Amino acid sequence: MRYIALLMVAFSGSLVAQVPPYENPLPADPPYYRVRYEASTNPGELVFPASYTVWIPSGLTTLRGLIVHQHGCGEGSCKSGQTGAFDLHWQALARKHACALMAPSYEQPEKANCQLWCDPRNGSDASFQKSLAELGAQSRHPELATVPWAIWGHSGGGHWAGGMLLLHPDRVAAAWLRSGVPPLRVSEGKPTPYYITDAACQVPVMCNLGTKEGVTVKDGRFAGVWAGVETFFKELRAKGGLVCVAVDPLTSHECGNQRYLAMPWLDACLIARLPDINGEPLKSMPNKDAWIVPLQIGDTKIDDASKLAPAPILKYQGSMEESGWLPNEAITKAWAQYVKDSAVTDVTPPPAPTTIRIVGNELTWEAEADIESGLASFIIERDGQFLANVPELGKNPYGRPIFQNLQYSDTPSQPLIQMRFIDTKAESGKTHLYRVISVNTVGLNSSP
Image (cartoon, rainbow, N blue to C red):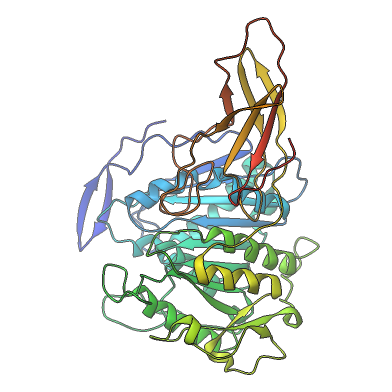
């Protein structure tokens, strides 16, 4: 389907004619579903076209929740959003918790005002919730319209995710804000600030940014990110919020290796918070298992922020307002490794591939990702001997090599890489035995 109509968008008080950011979205055949809405000219409604793609794990009778992966600002990030629901790693997290995985894509032209979608009060909240009802009908999962949300957002998507948390704290199980937060201060030219409620303070939140976004590097395009994060963190923590900061020691605005901390953190939050019966309120986070960690404040580095080591909440001796909250000891250890070198460890091998098929000399298979470490590649063996790596060399300019590759906003690149190998050296007329082995991003192999 091609979108050929021109998009008229508000920018700096004028109208700009712009071809939609992309014309050929990926097919959305079950277990994928999609709705798309045209731009609205009505006051308070979304001024950009938007599409919402959702993936539903097969075999589920009832969904327990929804994981939302929200891209950032700009045309490139809008384009990257169209592959978010196809990410095998995020699908593994959703599958474990009987959740759907959604990736919105707001068709914002490059020079348009990002606030017109990343502030959910400008129509994207209503558009998002409208899509849940329609996608629920499409997928025959009407509960999609009412289940809780776990929200991940990058840059402007972090603003959106944090805004949704503050607007709908009773619906949000957890929120991961990468390189963006909603505003809490009045300033010229900025969006109307939000207010922190008691209910919002009960939602686990992780503020994640790169050290080059104003923490250790004080100039450049993204140097102001830390100031916003620091304000958001301090105000939320001062009110007792369950919030922490994780500074990526290697990056600027790109997402880097954050998913290897985000996945186990979200996993812990979903285990603790999703209700046992649909329609019941989210469970409260059990504070008895929580740990407190010292953080950098202002110009102070993490390592020098406090003489105190991370400790269980009942034993921590430092200032709670200048320390971060984490759900348990295991996540605290992962956090400590992440803020040191981003190399979060994993000792569990990935699941073995399944459903291997051979047609002629073409081998195809299916595989689920390792929640902790994702998928880096596959090893192909023929007759007990190594034959090939698929892909030969994984690509990811922003972090660990990964099977699907990664774009700037933490989504797979296009075209999507297939689980497929053609054996061009197979001997005609001879029967061969093939084995496929999954490899995660820390180099651990699955069973064949």
